[in-house]
Length: 118
Image (cartoon, rainbow, N blue to C red; front, top):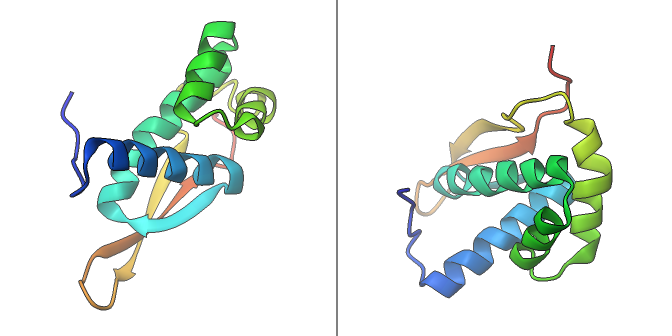
């Protein structure tokens, strides 16, 4: 699987992605660059899929990725898993904004999809 390095070392990149994933799961949306959003959405979808699984192994995987943040794990397994129980993926959407002043990086909003699957 190809991934983006995002100009960071491995430890810094994994920590940054975990923090951005936590922010999306807790707040419902974040504002970040397009490159980071495309990378983070993979992890958000994976965490929500683990939440829908509901097993102890899945809970431990989410807990390990989220740096033992039990508040996020509880929200994923109790609230978000039931909210997206009927949806087969596609839990996030990316809305494009304008370029950031200074470096012209394309800014986006990464948010969780609110409506139910039909």
